[in-house]
Length: 362
Image 1 (cartoon, helix red, strand yellow):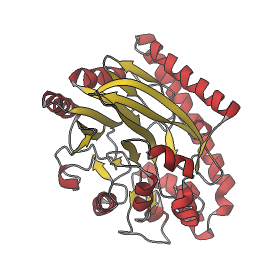
Image 2: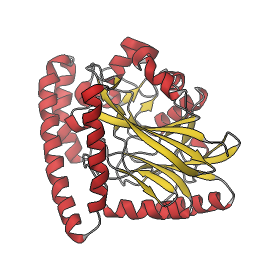
Image 3: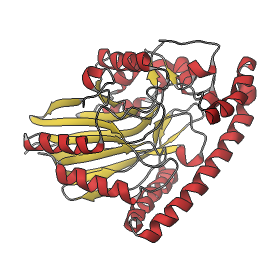
Image 4: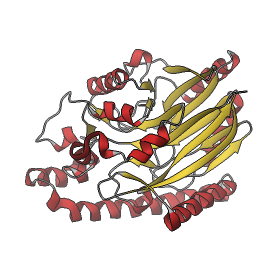
C-alpha cells in the first residue's frame, strides 16, 4: 500500500492591502521576485505529491490603475502565478470573499494565469468562468485517484461560492467517493480572528467526512484554529495566513499542514509552525519560537473539545465581538503608523475608504 504526502497552507495574498499600498506583499514580491520565498520552503514543498493553498487575491493587470487605491487593493501581478508554481504549490482554491473584488474579468484572468503556470484551479465554477457548476480537480497520485473541491461558504459582496451550495458540495463528495475517488475539500469559511470554529462548522465537517472526504483544509479566519481527526478523515479548520501583509499579531504566524494518506486514509499528519519577517516573507521558526507556536497549536486543538454547547455558542459570539473590535483598533493603529510610507496621493483615498465601505460603494 503506497502512501502520498500532501501539504496545505492557508491564505496566500500576493497584492498590497489598502493599508500597505507600496509596502505590502506585492511590493516585496517586486523587490525579491521568485526569491521572495526562502529556499527551505521550496525544498519542503517539493517533497510532497501535492500542495494546496487558498488564493486570496487576483493575479491580473485587467483594469489596473496605478493612481487608484481601489484598483490596487489586494491585486497581485500575473507573474506571481509563475512564482507560486516554481515554489512547488500545485493547486489553488479561488472560491473566497475577495476573488471578485476587482471584477469578473479579473477573476477569470487570474484562473487562466494559474492554469498557464501549471497550477490546478478549484473553486472557479464551470470551466473556470465563475459561473454555476462545481469545478473538480482530478489527480492521480502514486496510482491513487484523488479529487479536490474548493468552495466558499461566505455570503459577502465580492464572494464567489465556487459554483455550488453546501448541500451540492456534500452530494459531490458522496458521488466522487462512490466512484472510488478520494476527496480533499478546500473550504473558505468561519469567522475572522476567532481562534476556534463554530459548532455549525464542526457539524458540517463531520457531514463531509461521513460523505467520504479524507481531508478538509480550512481558511478565511486569518488565524490558526484547531486540527482534529474525525472518523477516517482529518479537519484543519483554519491554517491562518501563509503569505499576507498582516496587521493583527495573531495573524502573523500560521502552520503548514502536512498529511500522509494511503488509499484515502489519513495515516499520519503534522503541523509546521511558521512566522513572518518584516517584508511579509514566511520564515521557518526554530528553538523557543517553534516550541511557543507549537504550544499555541496544541492549545487551539484542545479548544475544539469545548465547542458545541449553547453556553459555548453564547461565549463564542461574545468572544467574536471582542476579537473584531481588537482587530479594528489594530488596523487603525497600523494605518496611522504606516501612512507616511504611502504615497501622498493615496492619503485622501485611505481616509475615504471607510466611508465608502459603510455606504456599500467599495
